[in-house]
Length: 148
Image 1: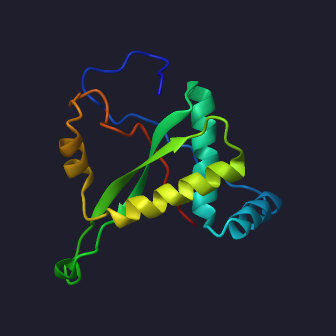
Image 2: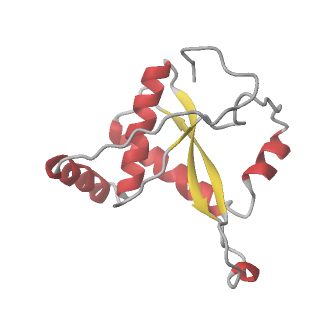
Image 3: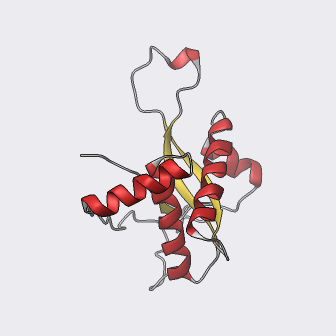
């Protein structure tokens, strides 16, 4: 994703967070799309977020990150702690309708969840992605849904 200023030599984690709420009417519409596409509200929001990011960046293809609790192993059931991993979700918003993009994101989410036994670090190492201390490998934008 293009940046509006030079990247620091070492990643600083001084990004920003944007919180917002949507009105009941908009939320009802989003839920209707999710229901009609047999998916979740999060998937619809992720598709819309990817569409906005892609347009802002002038790119059709991007990789959206989303946190996932990676507790698929029986050995971890009794262990206390945070086992959060980042799922990279490839998205190609070029020429897609919103519903087409929702279907694509849904398929990629399902595919990514099938591979949750592979950690983000293993994926980066396996792909041979060059390490750059100024940016995160593979993913530069993350979407996390938090209900309050």
